[in-house]
Length: 162
Image (cartoon, rainbow, N blue to C red; front, side, top):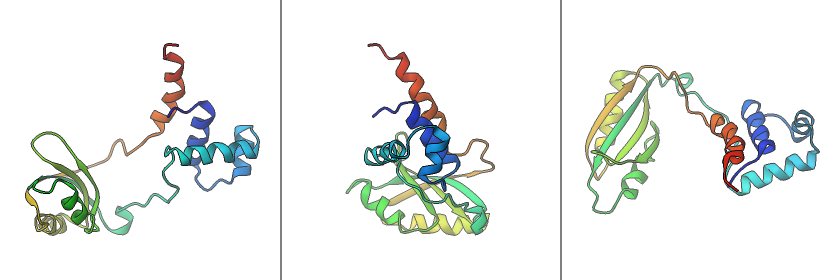
């Protein structure tokens, strides 16, 4: 699905100020309230916008250590059973299947470096996990972001051949 400039402006506005109402969005975008609501509904229905929840800082909750843990798993039943078990561990924030020497990549948080050892021990105890390798993140100079992609979509549309 492609988005146009108005969609991109709406997504940017709601990303920067998620608590804005439809009327204020329409005022700032210079379009009718019904247009904003219809665009938003379409973006949600097509899966472009996937949520409106607050972004929560793990550090503010006391989880000051972020690490990326790659897992080698026993693939008798595939990735899903292991991923479902990992999802039960609160400190596992996300899990990706990957290519290369490992099978899964997890982003995990811990309260301290020694607490990270506890989290890794819990992960190693998951049935199907054979081996782990962990890397501690020291800083996040570029946090997770999608707005550069959103801004680039309307420009890319203009470059496509007819």
